[in-house]
Image (cartoon, rainbow, N blue to C red; front, side, top):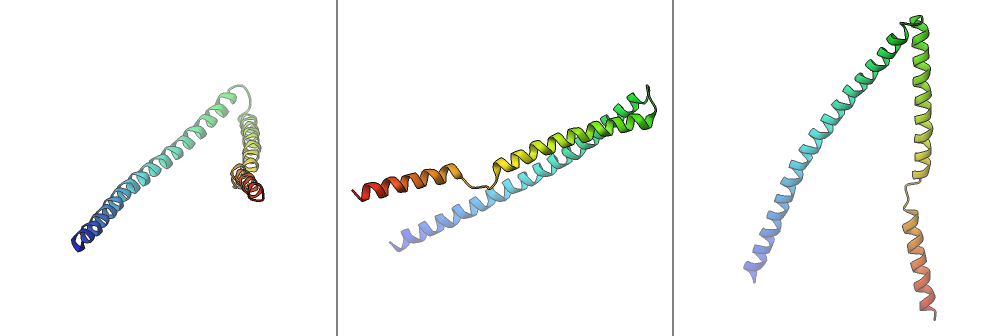
Length: 119
């Protein structure tokens, strides 16, 4: 019996070590992936800024450069405003972060059980 207990204990420790090693490996991969995604985001940002500069330069072929820059800036601000409004609406729909449907279901279940208990 003592030997069985010792073997179960050793098996549990080995499983925990294996789980820790697996999580460490996965954590390194997640960290590397997050870093690569961050780098991709920065490069995408630079790409977008280059496209915007290109649009300014394109418009500057038909009008003074300062007017072209203001037109492109106004368009960027309009797009930013629309994105902000959509984002705000999404935040409002997601807050407070409470599972309201699940809570309503639990309350309904409690009411049903209470009602049947009183019968």
